[in-house]
Image (cartoon, rainbow, N blue to C red; front, side, top):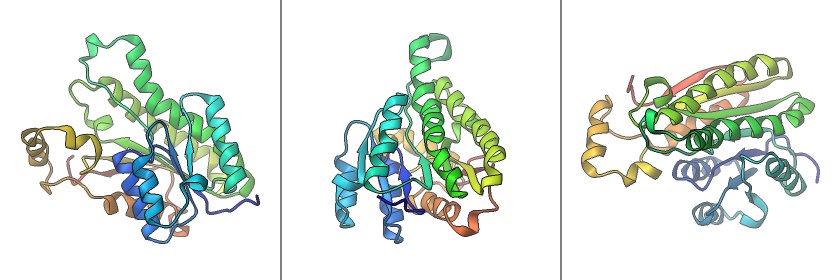
Length: 246
């Protein structure tokens, strides 16, 4: 199939924020979207069906820590929809443990889920963007990569490293009109946050100047801008979207 220069890939799209982001972008008229999932896919399937898109042609499974599967993901997307122009690296994962109790294999797993996936997906899709002389990469980091968090040292380290990766890629790719930016997200009203008790949620809200969690449009609006022609001059940036948390 011929390449479509506006195709956007969202990794980790079956997660709470990933689903809401896909729903937001689709609601704004961006129809040329490929959605990745790792294991479960029910939520993102429902989002695609809601917007009259066939999950069989817009939904792709892959283990993003495996470079062979990432290569297969690219080939499958290209065969179905064309070459990816915009990459949103949303996939990630975490664990809870004090730093001196983290096993090496658990530390590496969190690094792989967040940083290695970002690296492998970027590396896989950059060559086509370079051929197009145009592209967008949006990496997703976290506020805790810049503030720290008790019991999440591995996650904090991985999310902080994404910032350095972003800045290096932005320098390497500017000559090809490919922008690379990071959104460092605070607390949003989707996904794992809802597994916390009301007391813990209220404690987090109490530290946020807006005293609430973020909403999908407050992430999606930034990503829509970064994917637009108006976003071309914004690259190498770490944009903090956290309600004024710091």
